[in-house]
Image (cartoon, rainbow, N blue to C red; front, top):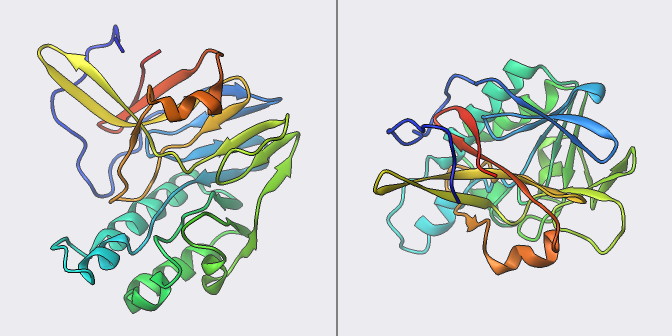
Length: 239
């Protein structure tokens, strides 16, 4: 994929960062804002949407002898707190796989658990959509748990479903790679088709699936897909 924008040289660093200007998009019959932090804002409903936090992924692998840092939840929650503080939503929808597995809550450090509970309490309404990793674990920290949520003709779910309405989903962790002067710039991305908007994964340890992977063919079909890459606290329109 090519871009006509000059991208900066340095990669994105983990940790709370300045939140750049959002990009407005119309999807379904509603107007949304794609945010460089990796969240989606629905201004008409003052709702923040986030997906695939995968909290405690580090501790999951560390317990299996893989030498990784277990501070990913600390980092993910800090960035989520920064996004909530910046946008000040009345409601948060977490689109599934908020935890890496169903025992993640047992491993979470007490300060991280308290931080998460305080974030849930800080908004009027927090909805946990169940994912294929976490089930109903999110409800332990407050808020309420649903399989999916439908509003204004748009379905909010973790994975795409065989229904005709517009859908905002997570699950796929879309990423994009862009050739740039003999090297490659890469980052998570928002992918917006005619009927499905796929969120980037928000978690610090989440990998990604290339947006041109064949797994996306049944998600978007033959329709055009608009792609915005997250790179150095900005969004870059790729196609």
